[in-house]
Length: 248
Ligand code: NAP
Image (cartoon, rainbow, N blue to C red; front, side, top):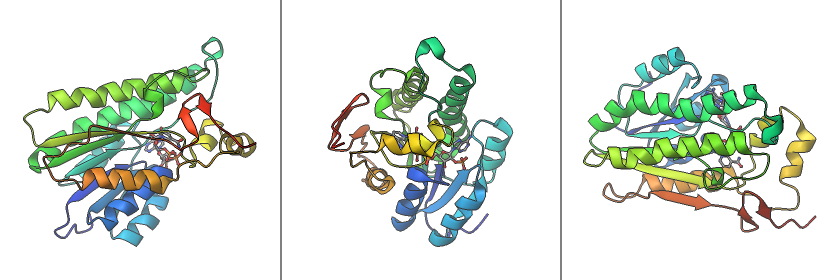
């Protein structure tokens, strides 16, 4: 892999777009050697070039891909579990099992696989940090969202459990819980339906991926004894997953 020089290494999953891409750039600017992982590795390569980072193909739902990816990273100080997303917006009565499996595999099992594989290296760094991007969907239910809120709650529980299990180890644990952020998230959720995706952000100023990335970089650059446990950030006009003010 490309030389990390003497920069600490940060792994960012789901770095090909949205919050992950912005986070890779923000961490690069903060002095990290960033290893970017996603299935669309060519998009990661473009960003890696900009920030003198390293792009490696990663499918978090595939154990072999995770093993190849983590095996190619000799040392790591920061893991950002960001890969994830939603599929569909259906009431429980009409739940699509394939959508549920996708959300569970990507958000929950993906976070588990990366975390498990990189824990020994984070520990060995002497100053490790795991930042997981869950969501305000990990705080409460909203109608038609059970597949996503369920997966985000499970991902959050995995992450929050680490806070206790890692006491005494040199690893910090930070959960980032964003509200509405304008990314490809809704396009993925609505399976390429651009009109439906655009409606999600109509009449409201959502967060940008850079807003979230700045927050992640802030948490990552506090002194080692400072653990920011949970950071909830939402647009001013959004109160919860089911309540927002729209101008039209
Ligand atoms: P996005 O633009 O769709 O980005 C999702 C990222 O996840 C992409 O880079 C995608 O890369 C990657 N990904 C998906 N499946 C993957 C897989 N199997 N293996 C590896 N990477 C995979 O959406 P985003 O909003 O930035 O989402 C990032 C995170 O923020 C997600 O965990 C999401 O749940 C969370 N979040 C988003 C919002 C929001 O409103 N946007 C709010 C709260 C939380 P490839 O397709 O190239 O693999």
